[in-house]
Length: 267
Image (cartoon, rainbow, N blue to C red; front, side, top):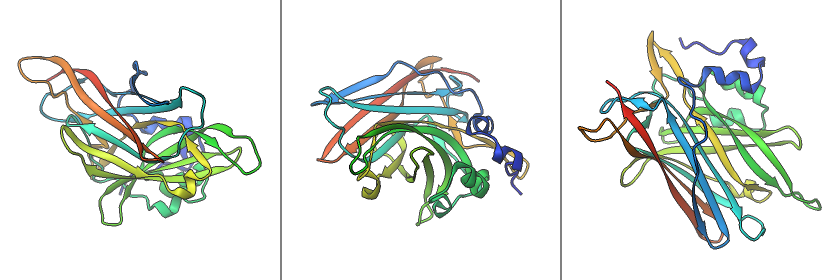
C-alpha cells in the first residue's frame, strides 16, 4: 500500500504541501536565457538540484522550469496553443509505483478537493500567470497556482496533469501534459495542447513549475525525477543541455530556447 497524505496535510496550505515534494531544495532562479521574434519576447530559466550528480547513473533530483512571455510594443499577447518542455539526456521522469490520478477527478475542483481525490499522486507545484479576458470588462491579470499530479494518457502513456486554480475571480482548468520521446539530444518532452475553450478567455503569460518527489514502493525508495551529470571523462565539471522550452502561438508563431546548466560529478 502506498502511504497517502494525511487528512491534516490535505487541509494544510499549498505552501505546506511542498514539503512532500522535493528530494532536495530546488535551486534559486538562475539568469534567464531570452529569445525574440518580432515584437514577441520569451525568457526561460530553471535548473536541477542537487548539482553534484553521478556521471553515468541517475540519482534523485528536483527541477525548476519557467518561462515568461511579453511584447516589446505593449500589444496583447497571442494565444498559447502548445507548451513543450524537453529534458536533456541527464534527466528522466520515473513514476513507477506512484498512484495515478485520472484527469476527470480534477475538473471544476478546488485545490483542497484535488488533494482529497489525488493527494497520493502529487508530484509538483507551480504558478501560471494569466490575463483573464471577460466580455465587457478590462483584462485582469492573475498569478494562478497549480498542483501537478502523476497521470496516464488514454493509450497508457506517461502523463502529468497541472490543475490551475484562482479563487478570485474563480478560474479552474487542467493542462494535460503527455510525456513523449524527444528528437536529438533531448531524451523526453512534456507536451500539452492548450484547449481553445481555455485560450478563448485566458491568455497565458508563462509558467513556473517545480517537479520532484521521493516516495516508497514496497519498502524501497523511489524518486519521480532522476538526473545525472553527463560530462565526458576525464572532466568532473561541465555544462549540459538541461531543458528546452517551446511555446507555439496562434498565427503559426513559435519560440524555442534551451536552458544550459552546469553540474559536478560525484561518485
